[in-house]
Length: 402
Image (cartoon, rainbow, N blue to C red):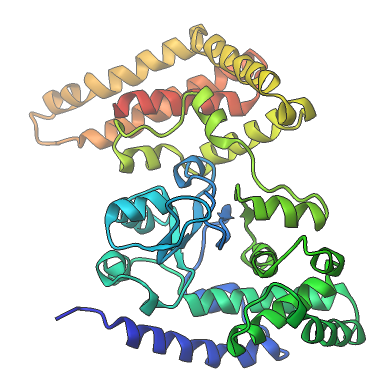
């Protein structure tokens, strides 16, 4: 007998939506933590659900950059663009769509580094696939909760877009014109799509729908994009819908070539490194340093346009890291850390006739702290940015993981 009744979960989730919905539309708007039931890390990114089936930003390329990644979980996947969707019933299918296996996702979720959110009601999924994500204590965001967050984002957008009359006009136009546009004809879907289209109209995007540049997928994406404000997160996706919508919403960034840069900087995830150890290397300080490095690299307009220029920037950063590694101060402190790792334990135990046992992990932390202080000092003396020191530390830790 199955441990989870997905139909019951979906029904309970729907009830949750209707319990919170009046509060969102009322005067006392609930905070994000009230909707989620838990607190998110400060620096986080949001991968919006995209109905087109194109690849989103790679999860493992985002793990080094953010403490929390909000990842959509799909019940289906698209083997090839334009093909029919296939229901996800095997782990290989799950990895094909989401970039990680269910077991890897559980590990990342338990550490709070990836929070899965369900893009559809629970009963649309294969029970065998999502059951591990439903275990007690594993963080997740349900379909209803994400819909509440989207509703909150839409209400906020409408309030800032204009007055009540503008919103009423947008609603009337959307209701009138949705029948002539490429939107679902089902009654329930048409109602929901009208609301999303109204928001798009209120944001000044009507002309793009009138000229058939946009369809209902674009309207859906707009509401997901708006959710980044409610989530206080950075939007990351590589879907063509993002380029269409975001460029017409004010040239907002739709993603950066993260994997290419991380590979060039020698910190890209590799299966020969235990996933748990890889995740632990990138704490909040290291993640902040990598985000700053990426920001500096892409601050050059030519690096965004030309691979040759981007490659040159990466080479220059690697050169600075190597210069830091050759610094006398860094080498001295690395030697001190090795003494702590391999000599200190025996010294203390021999002096106390083994009455005091020293955990190896304690010495590893001590060694890393000593090495870290030395590298920071070396970077300061060479007048290098602090992020270069953090990049070097990350590389050293990754070498130990292999």
